[in-house]
Amino acid sequence: MDKVFYNGVIITANEKDEVYSSGYVHVRAGKFIEVGSGYPDHIGTEEANFYNLNGRWLLPGLINTHGHTPMTLLRGHSDDLPLKRWLQEKMWPMEQKLTREAVIVSSKLAMVEMLKSGTTTFLDMYHLFLDDIANVVDEIGMRAVITRGIIGLCSREEQIAKLDEAMTIAKSWHGKGDGRITTMLSPHSPYLCPPDYIAEIASEARTLGVPVHTHMSETAQEVEESVNKYGKRPVELLQSTGFFDGASLVAHAVHVNDEELEILTEHQVAVSHNPMSNLKLGSGIASIQKMLSKGITVSIGTDSVASNNNLDLIQEMRTAILLQKGINQDPTAVKSAEGIKLITVNGAKALGLRNTIGSIEKGLDADFIIMQEQQAHLQPAMNALSHLVYSASGADVIDVYVKGKQLVKNRECLYLDEEKIITECNDHYRKMLK
Ligand SMILES: [Zn+2]
Image 1: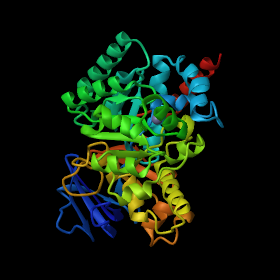
Image 2: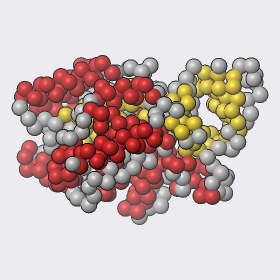
Image 3: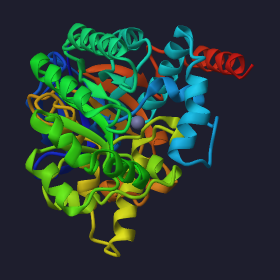
Image 4: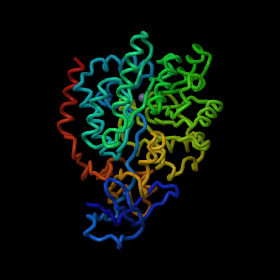
């Protein structure tokens, strides 16, 4: 049976940035077949189930374009260190203790947190038990881009084995879950992969027809080391490997100069901006205002909660916007309608999914969230878009749908046992500390 949601504020994130103060959406077979203002008199009650939104907000499901869900188990494990020491001394030793069960349950914990804060689609770059993670995504009805992060500083035999594994995952999961799961190939970063190997991975990605993803120019130290080692900054280096010759998405892009921005623009490279992680690790602030003005697709990622420390994309978007206003000393930098796009439309573009999701529009998959507006911090009720950008948080999300199927109802995940997951996560973390 069709579903009609009416009498709500519809924040479409479409080309015209339309917001209907009282509108409706009509969902059939997992897609929006109509979106409009007013009450849908022309749809009969025998044709669809009607849901009265009572003034609540309905907007596109949020899209997180960079993260590592199994690291959710390491939230709070280490604070106040720079990236290199944080990875080498704190994260990697703990990650070696991650069992298959621990990876699965920490991914589930991330998915509970994402769903309950309105994220319906996420990119997951990891190197362990990705088949298991993809299986969970498949079962619970979320949407994800699964990609094996490849560290290439190892023997040639290991390089071949890692790339084989990454390609097998990419091939076997691309398009699965009724199209909800897609894949990419991901050399971890130019500092942890030799250029020849990156070239090989990028070439295989194009043969498979999947995009490439990597961490790039996250810290000033990384850029300096790249220049010392290869005589090239990371963007130039990646360009020389052919990494940008097909669909590509880079996370961070904090330390990128004007010439490098030109290269990213020319090759239509999408950026996943991870402001909170970059701030927490003291890496710097990416110039996304400049990127947006050049037409670069800038989306938002949280990175893992070990460096964030949560997966609330609404807070992440607000941080991104406020930082740009502050560093540019310009209150008009990244306006509110653009802010919403960073975590919806632009996320869809960055993941190569714009024909499927990203806005509330006829013909797209019905991935959407409903937010409770009857709260003190969201009053006066008239200015929904402003409140969403500058005052709301993921805790205001009450219902979540992917492809028209409800995954969260009144803040309860319907396909994940939150209580059990929390207990198991704590048990695994305790064991890893021993
Ligand atoms: Zn990352």
